[in-house]
Length: 97
Image: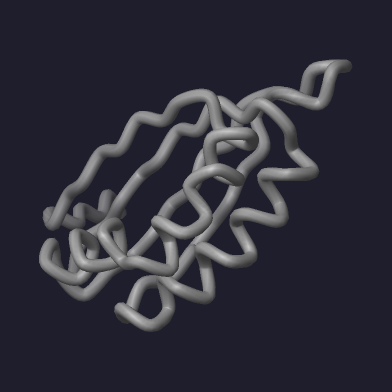
């Protein structure tokens, strides 16, 4: 299992929500799951920042999701909704109890 932490610079939260609903459906077909989404910044113009914590069975499943033709079909919507993103992948789970 891998965890994926994504920091997204959102251009338009309304368009972003439309894109994310499509992306999550595609993600699930690869065993991926959006565990948490946190809106960290919301500007008056509808832009801001959101952080996602995803989970996938392995690196290959995540790579297949990222190259899925259905996701690529929504590239224009993604470009209008998301300015940039930073992706961090880890397979090392730690617990501090």
